[in-house]
Length: 341
Image (spheres, helix red, strand yellow):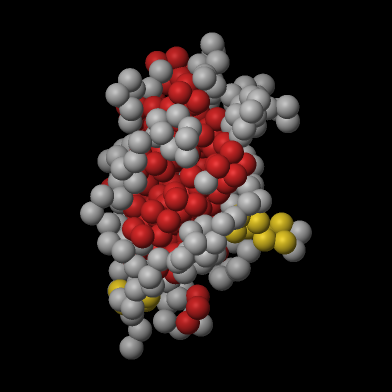
């Protein structure tokens, strides 16, 4: 997604190194498995991913959770997904991400709770925090989930959508006001904006891919299908989709999310085209050994500054369930490598 971690509101700077999951010697021809194996091998200390900022690497909780979703989608690297949540549950890591004291970040809280659900955990008791209660406390009278922070409110369509999907997976379900708010953000052309409350409604491909998943999960099928129709209209000849208004160069991040949304909305032809584009970005047996299995951000090829985030979201477009039903149940362990002879 436009070279950013859309839901990572804060980067935690504390990391505890634990024993890495045992690496698997297994090889695979399946693209999603090879991509997940490559992604698992990027983990620092076997339990988290890092982001470079100004020449210094910092633990990136949001990106690590993206990997948890990717592992569940591909159905492997289960031990790495478990280690990631163990790492995030450490108080210093968790509060640095979702906020502490008077600081509370809606997007990060929703994303963490969803990852716990995906891995079969209890989001009402994670790292000593009731993530569900915390998330509900950030629901405003308008139906929008908003940050409580001295730094301002950085919530957007991603925050709103993941909060809806997360709460819809709880016994109480998603608040109707929150779903109403998301549905009402739809632009006249059928897409959905990334920025909430802007004076001009500008449809965004990444936002539409996620909002439609939230609306499908909560029964707002008509508006979701209108959004998918707009998203499909932005799919280019090779199957890729560009970020923003969809008029630029396609990329793996946006296309991965879109492919996941197309499957959720029963758009198999569009989902297949998205998959074909993603497959064109794979690093295959002709690439250096350390790059094999990864998925590049775009057709310019392997770029170490973008490839990790691109791979996490591209995997979602290869196969697997939408966020509303995504689960790691039945996943295998280890980090398979691409089979090359």
